[in-house]
Structures are given as structure tokens and as C-alpha cells.
Length: 130
Image 1 (tube, rainbow, N blue to C red):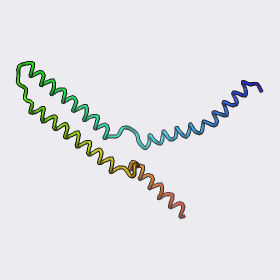
Image 2: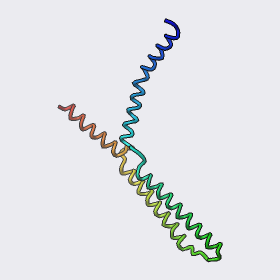
Image 3: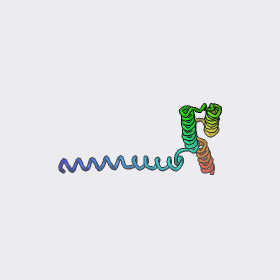
Image 4: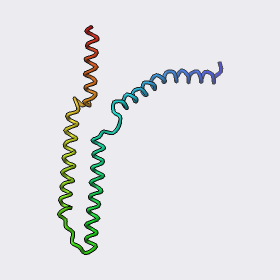
């Protein structure tokens, strides 16, 4: 056997050794996508709130500057009210998200995964007894 044929044979053996590991990694990725299909709704809502409040803050700031430049005295009452409403909404949402996360975890494990684990244990217990 020539040297190039030996190298090719070694590469084939190395590939055959790596192939099951790569297949297993691909299977794990597929299972993770099934368990957690995308971005959580709480994060989507948080991004929406951030963008919405930012746009409103920019609009109120622009309106205040516009009124000042045109010689009108702006009324800061709506601005102050809006800022306190934004802070209150954001804090209440943050507290809700933290509470929800605490309720949906069991020793650091997401609730759905914990329930799947319990179901697996129940199924295996039935097989071992019978």
C-alpha cells in the first residue's frame, strides 16, 4: 500500500469514528428546537414595551422642544405623568416576569422540563415493577 492510500484509509477511519458523535449532536439540536421553539413571549413583550415607550418619549420630547421654539409655554404635566406611567409599567412588568420565572422553575429547571422528567420517572417505575 502506498502512503497516500494509508492516509486516505486513516481519514476514513477518523470520519467513521466522528460520524456517530456528529449525528448525536444533530439529534440533540433537533430535540432542543422541539422543546424551546423560539423567543419567549415575555421577551417579545419586553422589546415591544421598550420600543413603544421610547417612541412616545421621543415624541413628547420633540413636542416640548417644538413648543419652546415657537414661543409657547409647554405644559410639563403630561410629560411628568407619562414618565411615571412608563416607570410604573416597566417595574410592574419586571416584577411579574421575575415572579413568573420563579413559579415556572423547579430547582433551576424549567417547569415543562421538570414535568417531562416526572412523567419519565412514572413511566419507568411502571416498567420496572411489572
